[in-house]
Length: 159
Image 1 (cartoon, rainbow, N blue to C red):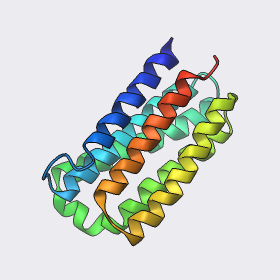
Image 2 (spheres, helix red, strand yellow):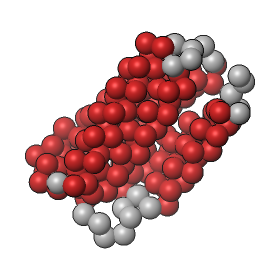
Image 3 (tube, rainbow, N blue to C red):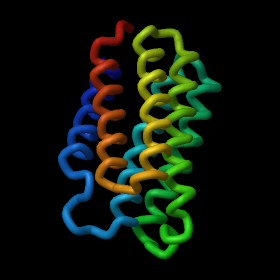
């Protein structure tokens, strides 16, 4: 039952980010901060779920989730911080997705492995698109897709 609830949280967050990748006219730093904040929440939830199955992998995901959460808050509160970290941010979020994907590959469940593959692919696309196109809407949509696909796969995951 817990996985079903978490799956719906991922789906709702994914739909929210897909519908509002720019959240209107809010500055890019705040949008990216929100996206990283949502990524941090997703990693925290996934890490806490993994604590029962593979404690060390769950702890690693929780640590990355906390880092993403703190960075997201920093970008929201201090847009100046964002201005010198913008290039690093794209690599960081993409790297977090790739690492979350690698962690997902080492879990027991077959669907978790698919979650891992999805996260790795979207993380690599995120890095490429972020460096070439630099459109925050596309980056938000990629995070939304990751959350949505992960949530859907979690719904079909056998306990």
